[in-house]
Length: 474
Ligand SMILES: Nc1ncnc2c1ncn2[C@@H]1O[C@H](COP(=O)(O)OP(=O)(O)O)[C@@H](O)[C@H]1O
Ligand SMILES: [Mg+2]
Image (cartoon, rainbow, N blue to C red; front, side):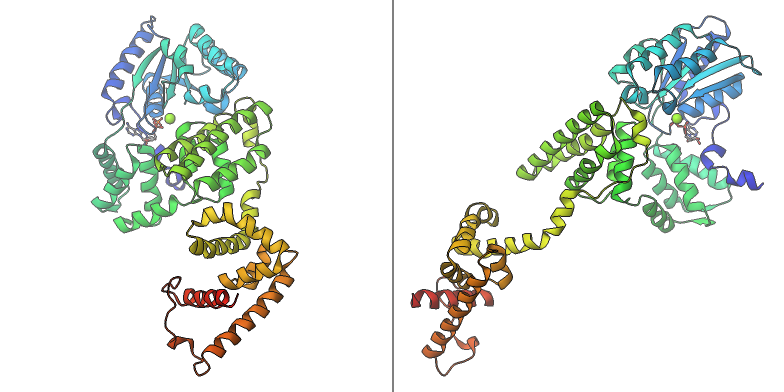
């Protein structure tokens, strides 16, 4: 009782017979005919490739076949067949020998599309060899069977398509589970889960189970609350690790989406930690090639504002990088301590300085009618030279722009004290001048706004006055 309660629902509600699978009627018919050809001893094709979106019943179909037709299942999954020798050892032996208890065997190479991305060249050869020599049916599954490297395998296999399940089909199965689990479910809540699953029954059932845990009633509110928490954003360290460990394009992209880092920040994180995780020089070279292409896209996006290019950039920095690691796949799974990207660290350390620089550039920009960026590139370097070499002139500029002491210190390190001395003298002289011209009025609020340079803000007027007074005096 206790044990059965702990069985995950995706296993508990796995179809036991071929006909129990929802939809997939074409697949069922093809598979049954293929199995009959095996029973008759004259199979047309020795292998079948089940392909279709995740959670559409491919693996379930294989298990149902075995149960119904009495095959012993010999299973390999992606992590087992990255090397040709692994496939040869396990699958080939199994394909020739008879099972210990069952007389027939079925060999399952689950998720073979993983092979094309991560395996050495020989893996595909080994699979072809297996298909050639097998005395037992071989079933392969794949999300994406159209990968070029799978082509020879495709040619030798019966292609069986699994359709993406519709929202209604997902919904109906969820309802059945609710009934069986004696759960009270709001229709809206189930619809929400079904919608979100995009036809992936595995994720739909997992979501339902996550919400049902501890709650006897499933409401839309609860669903939204819990599922949002489940889709939580991960720490940058985790995200980078997950991206590098991805075996499929979709997986890498999904992992890359689980962060709230900006795309260029994510790129920095990958850039920093890639060489820690990956050691094979060729893998690294390929991965950095992908990353640098992502960087090119990012640059164009920032320059041109074409955010529609972002999809390419993220795909390159996630899938492009992850699928570059083919020589030493094991290195992806080593545990290494990741580092905070040095560029971002530097940027944080220099944040204050950059904020100062930006403010100065804005102040100058208003006077010379240029953008902040233009000023930073074309004006600030000269201002710096002045501040470093001519403290008197620098002081006039500082007073004119109403720069703070720290701004002056930002503009010149070696002459800051001299400049600031001049600034104090100038300010004193200016205020005496102002007092002398308007002896009775001390409050600045009553003075009329200055013409020309005067803008609406108070500081602006003050700057304008300072400048005017200064220029009149000189
Ligand atoms: N067509 C289907 N009919 C009934 N249940 C399904 C179907 N497809 C998927 N499921 C459910 O989703 C889970 C995952 O399905 P699976 O066969 O492993 O998908 P995949 O196509 O990714 O191999 C199964 O355990 C089962 O509960
Ligand atoms: Mg599967």
